[in-house]
Image 1: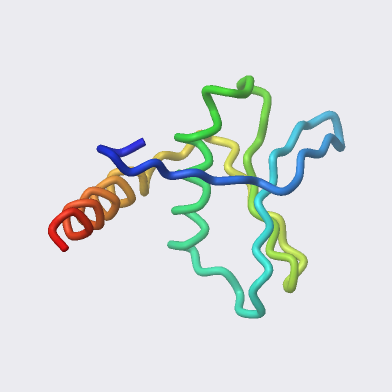
Image 2 (image 1 turned 180 degrees about the horizontal axis):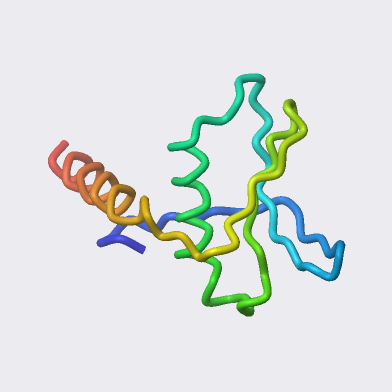
Length: 97
């Protein structure tokens, strides 16, 4: 939650394979996912879902159209300040109109 704005992310899959546990968000668009978009999604998953899971969980995004799984194994929060700033900006504009 940022200010009065509640941000939710809902991964579609929970899987276990190769003795690893994954929580996966599906990316279904035809275009290949950009590195920035991927990092934003994974940062949001880390910040919103890590407190509900154990450290053994690997958050990932599956680019369905391009058959590519992107893992966030290092607990990357790189884009979190950017996302929080955008949320605060949106909230401020929304309250002003």
